[in-house]
Length: 268
Image 1: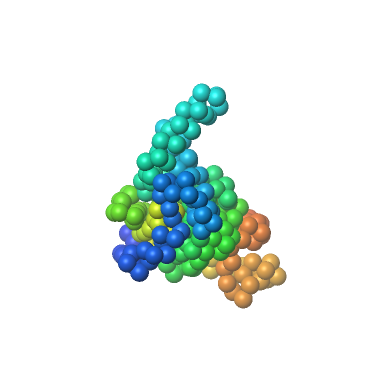
Image 2: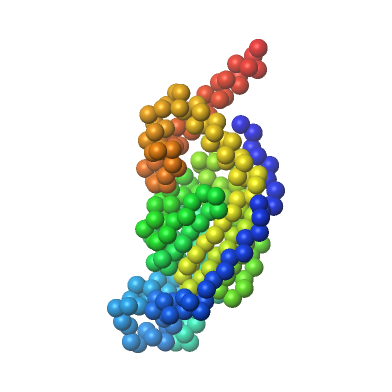
């Protein structure tokens, strides 16, 4: 199958809104500035730990600090304590850069730390995942298919980032698609944690995936019906590391079959 040429035109504009007035009380319960470190409570323990961890990641990324020597580790710790004493929060752009790096490293536990407990993750026309537990399964899928994400055209407005994104992975590659483009992405932060993500594929990318999936499922329904039923229970696309492995095996067979058929047609 030929690779699909991409444009960067979103299907339609996405305007993500955040009810700050209605959600402030809840947000304050979940997020504390570093000034509260001297009085930790059971309510802020988890998110406080996430904040410290993410701040460490951003500082290492920004200052490219090596912590192999005692002196370097001490300097880094002093810098971290200084930032903490100021009650500072890393900028969303720095957090997004660290998030992209984590995504591409496939460190599932590390990636989950970037999300709020009640994270809402939506791909328009695809799926909606709510909470860290559901998003974890999606993250495991991305790691299993060797996903790579690149954010571009980043615009920061307060606690909200809008951007475009390019995704590559082994599922797409085996399906004959080099990459897909998200023409519109809205990422909202609550402090240092991502509270919501809304992404939308460009029309061409959406069509490319739809056409490839149709071809694959038509072939598999005749040649590998049992495997297809396991991969798509009740016709639904399910994200998990285990099913990702099954999909890659099925796609490899399908790709080989399509290549053989093309060779036969060319020989006639």
